[in-house]
Figure 1 (spheres, one colour):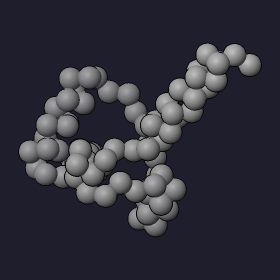
Figure 2: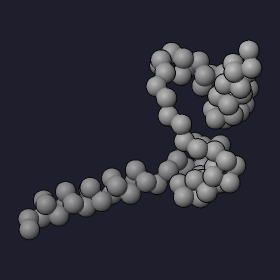
Figure 3: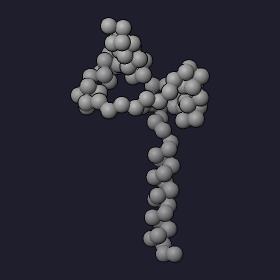
Length: 87
């Protein structure tokens, strides 16, 4: 194996670790939970993943609304869907 191949493999290994590392506390607001731990907490709350595709402008508006109300995106979307279903 050539020396350059070893460096390529080392670079790929480092990239893989960086992708799985998560966001540091100084950028996120609070502690970063492991995916497994977060999944268990969500299951205990009765939450399930539900992916949808929406317009990019709508997603931006939702993010700014969540930031202005100081709540996370999941809580905001839950609130908006519940209000929409009652009317």
